[in-house]
Length: 244
Image 1 (cartoon, helix red, strand yellow):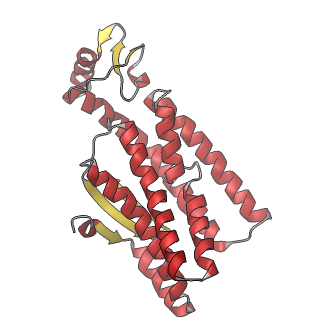
Image 2 (image 1 turned 90 degrees about the horizontal axis):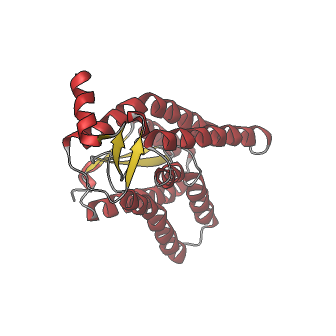
């Protein structure tokens, strides 16, 4: 019940629903929404198992977004499992729907949503998974900018695919949405990195790995650091005293 209370719908969702009703495609839309709903429910349920507080589950015309109110220094492996839970719940939902209904378009919608969502683009599950995997090998900011570069290349390829092979207006709208989310990610990265540093200053994170860094902008997730030969806590204490 707590999960249900976090669900909300973007204003564009209602506009899209009105267009669906006018076009007579309500049955098709219902199956799409069931797949999307169970996909986001997968993220939410596994997140709650790990005791992550759900901030919101928002549905847009072409997808959903589950946000958790957690620390930026959260577990990489747990977040990977939460992200994978979405596609897994969707696959299970499709198998159940396919057992009771014989509509061919259910499979088509399922594969389209699943494939699209796993593209390596920021804000999609594929992009988030890529970023988390890179976090294991690169520092926070480098991991983000590699993911950002791959996201931009992927969106450009997707737009070119639309132009030359698959003239689909809905896909063009999705590309615009993804471009908007990428731009927002670029604007927000300073805020999230500051939050990442502030958490490490305020809380005691005990990690097995220790890295030596010559810059505060080269810190890793799930590692403790020596920055310019100073203990991380000591260095961050001076950093925040200087910048507040």
